[in-house]
Amino acid sequence: MASVTRSYRSVRRCVLLALALTALSAANAQELLWPHEAPGDWLLAFVDVETTGLLPGHHEMIDIGIVITDLDGAELDELFVRIQPEHPERTSEGARAVNAFDEDRWRELGALSTDAAISRIVGFHKEIAGDRNVLMVAFNSHFDASFLDQLFRSRDRSWRELYHYFIMDLPSMAWSLGIRSLTGTSIAATLDIEDEPHVADLHTGITGARLNARIYRALLAYNDTE
Image 1 (cartoon, rainbow, N blue to C red):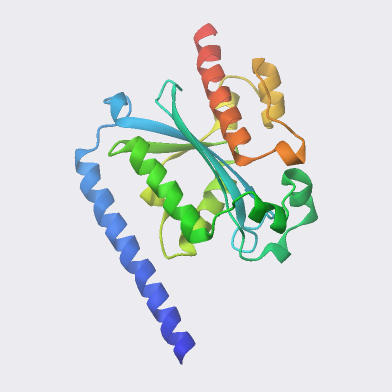
Image 2 (image 1 turned 90 degrees about the vertical axis):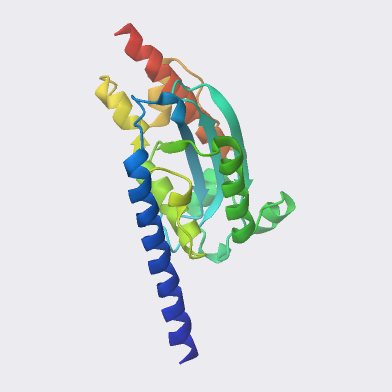
């Protein structure tokens, strides 16, 4: 019975949060000026995460990198947070080969708990963005958004506290300009910009987020030359 009661309370909190966010979104929508109308009211957050595997809800985020810029890609600030997963035993060997995750090493590197990580991420956005709208930009946007959603959902919160409804995807931007590549490495090569490290010990969310911001700026320049 206690388990059922806890589940009910959890569901109720989620429903109330969803209703509150919906009401807030509806109120904001009445006053919202879109990026082409008020570019100064909008920012971009280039996001990249590393995880213990590919399945959100089973695997977990172990770090996140965020680079916040204006709409022209000029950087305002960046954040890198390591997160201590609650189920490190679920780490896939494929993920470990990419990001060198090790439970003890993460602890030594100052990885935060889930609660502390969420608090740090939210605090960073409040400090840098203030009341401006923030669009999330990622490379595999569905992947990063899914893991960010799971992180916040695990504490009955929503990542929509941070970002606007729309999410932008860098390969789609490149594709629309005729760059038919689907990896960061190949797009970086086409645009003649620095790639991120692919050595596991050096490959983190912040190296990916920085690459995402470089790709975006290069795509803006590429578009101007076409």
